Image (cartoon, rainbow over the protein chains, first blue to last red):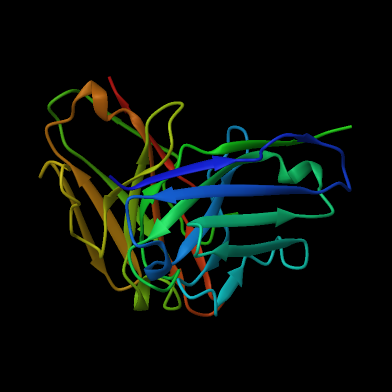
Length: 121
Length: 110
């Protein structure tokens, strides 16, 4: 069974940093693109970043460019999202999602349960 | 402001059918496949329709998708109370090299 489990969400200060992790299992991890999608309280879905299966290609939403960095460790089936210079508007549930193909432009066919980031002083 | 436009809400009685529209542009819906996701209260989103009109295994044929030009539509027939959820359309936007979503539509089954 394909499973994605996010971790690392926490309460952080404005201007601080966090690293989110996503542990993948049940599929050939390096063969699939991955994305991070967030959802602010009471709001809709916002895609923030994606990475190809090989990690050669990464993409970011304009709203987070320069502050968020996506990466992956294919040896350990792990996806990461480094969040820097945190702002109140980064407060959200962050979901890890698997793409249906090697690029992150494919549809997202499996989603994790999410991890919560709260930015507040 | 979402790149893709959906109605904020739709409602109907059990057994009825509804459609949810999703409007975009040539850089997203017009030249890429559309997916639909549903999100039950307090849970993670789940894939409902992919590549405009295909259903993942386990999704009943009460759910259907279509696309025409720069718009897409989700249809649900034989509404059940368990269908109450938020529904999102999404697709790749070639001009910004990013996934884009609609703002979501809340379905209420009266």
